[in-house]
Image 1 (cartoon, rainbow, N blue to C red):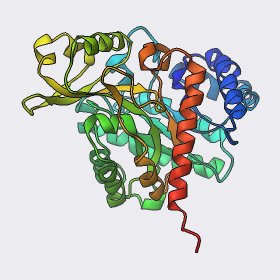
Image 2 (image 1 turned 30 degrees about the vertical axis):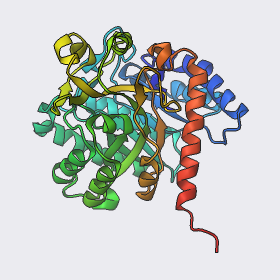
Image 3 (image 1 turned 60 degrees about the vertical axis):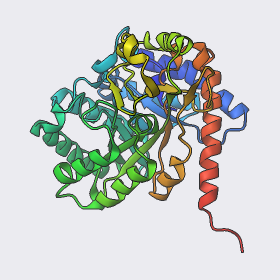
Length: 381
């Protein structure tokens, strides 16, 4: 489970979250038979990561909080720089982007913390933004320079700690990269061009919600990674919201309740005449009644609970389970549930009982991963 469902803007907030809701979540997971270890995806903003990494006392306290909570960390989320649970996030979640030394420094500090928590020989992953919002960051030599420095820094981190950490950039609708295949090709050409496949420490975070919104098929995403040799750092198990059959007054009203939250809800879809539809944010679409009347289908960047498929009134979840066996075949070992929207999701979309929903989601993830793993085992003969 990704910790960005909770705030993490100060060291005190991080410690309180671990001693409170995370500890309760892990307890309830074990109560329903979830096996150990209980994996937890660490989230610290820049305001928390810096003070913790610079203080031996705070690093020790972080380790003790994780132990008391009964969770283990082998992945972290360094996409949000800070303020991810503020009043208005939207495209600010991408800032500072990879053109900035601030982004590089923040990511290095989170990697250092992850290296501190992992044992020698262990592997970890660290997700980050897809360079930036819009195309500019992919055109910048500074982005390339900073990612090459990150590649070198992660190799040195492994030499010092024995822990292998992969930086996993996360394609997102309207980001500098929207699709796994485009990001993998760019990394292979510009960042990893002189790095042997076994030495590569910069790769891809495959968010299944984002991939569904832009219409990328799982087999195409994995084929691109195989073709380029770019590592799949981790898979974020997530589902997007979809609408089939147009927008009536009931659906529009329900979507307005969603659009009021702080986050960016990019939209992709199709109009009744067959033309594609793309909108930078759900609120902009809802503010255009003439366009709403022409909508046939939508895929909305909103992370909805993965254990639910139907939210009523024609609001559905995008499928995610079929991606897991494909990712396992590629050798992926890091799978992280990410439904950061839960604290503010309307009740009709699965909001309400935060810890209970997270427990139910983890059960669905565990069953799906167990099934995908069983499908890969040779039949007894």
